[in-house]
Length: 350
Image 1 (cartoon, rainbow, N blue to C red):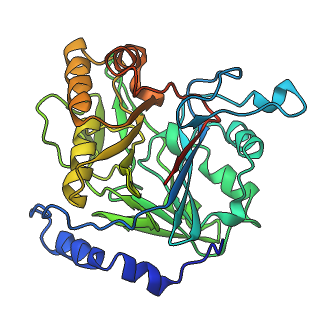
Image 2 (cartoon, rainbow, N blue to C red):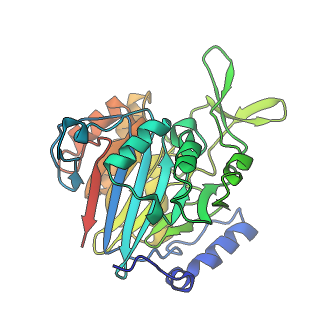
């Protein structure tokens, strides 16, 4: 299939977006109307997990999850696992294939090992995105880029939410504050082939995939933990992660695919935000880090209940969701639940 879409075709397919982004810039306090982001339907979607916390080299295929297959050696099915997250997203829209990378994990050698095992071709990548500036989503970025600089396309966009390059911090129980290792803008620009694009509102990633923009918080229980802070002068103040991005896809005839990274502003909020800005109620897949590790039992219970009410076809908790929440989803939504493992491909076709 032809894997090129002209800029004009992309803009025509997402014509309403310019108005949405302009309105967001001019009137930041005004909520966007329901259904103003029109994501082109994807005939197929392939999400490949390049990094995640959990590895199981012998697990079988399950529902839409396709596991690594042994070819010549047990090492063929032994991917790297880490406290980190990275995805490759591929779509087919109007017969044309597109590819992007979303988040990059923490260990560059481990993530690149998985990229090789999973046959990821940097030359196919049209765009890059980082959900937020924490180390477990971007620490491997620079080394992956440097090691593949001759393969990536010149001018490849890197999408990040505003604010991003200021960095965030964490307050430890002993009162000390540590940096969470934000990327430096000059280091990214110094790579020489990447164009940084900072976004405020919903924005196209590749055809068939959109960034959420700032996720509206509507639940009363999904709170950002107070240990996460921003630096303001000499002081540290609680952060709300206004620039954290998730990705929304529109699977033809099936509904929304909501792909989160950490969902610091809440996974239920993220899904409801996706439904609101697209005007699409039907949800096919909710997948990603739900940031429920260490959460109070009542918060986990409310989250599971609200996701269950949304009734996605599949639910795939990853990364920072935490054992207790993963277990709760598996018990409450057994027919929809899929356990994720690093190296898994999620295949969604018409």
